[in-house]
Image (tube, rainbow, N blue to C red; front, top):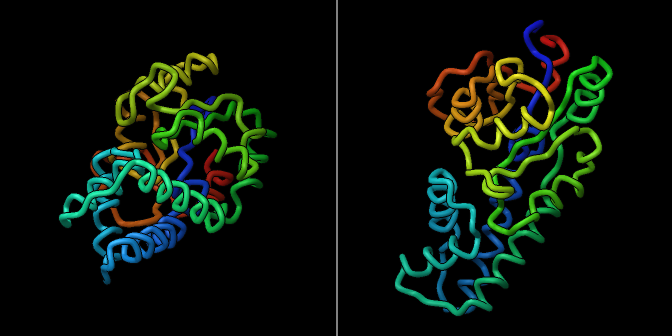
Amino acid sequence: MKLVDAVIFDLDETLVNTYPAHIKACKKVAEKIEEKFNKRGLTEALIQHTQRLDRNRNYDRNSWWLTFLLSIGLKADIPFLKYLTKLYWETFMKEAKLFRGVKSTLSYLRRKGYKLALVADTDGIPSFKRERVKKFGLALFFDEIVIAGEEGTKIRPHPSAYLLTAKKLGVKPERCLVVGDKPFTDIKGGKNAGMLTALVLRRYWPTNPQPTIVITSISQLKEIL
């Protein structure tokens, strides 16, 4: 794509296979809730609850557990909610893995002269998403990392994080390609910023709005760019 000077990536489910990690982490949390309140069979309900909140762009894990407990007529104090969040992230980080070909593709794009950036939504804990990027060994590949919902930006699909990134890169928005797996955050946010978009097909989502291109793996970018 001759019209592209910079490629802006999402993190979760785009570069990192996080969905299985999320399921396992929720299972651990559900087990602790069941143990504390002498309940059984909460795992599936908790997973569905977290997915609804994530779809509605609520990324505060403490809020996830609190609202779930309230929905089934239970209450918990803040220390227990924080304990569940700590357990969730410990399990999540242990299980989450990079998708195949991610580092080789990022290295290729850098050699080709593209500016690379990462834009991802906050995890609800200031600076924690940046720490996750470092732990996955990805930070050195990017010229800029911007966390939407922090640094004076709003969570996506608001375009502020993408526009800030383009400004930091010194690239016009229309010459940026946003790569992500979710139409309602990555693609919509990129289009709101006036950027080209590439949807990575990881799970089924209604494809609205339509991306510029659709790919099935990050490695395909080497054939396109």
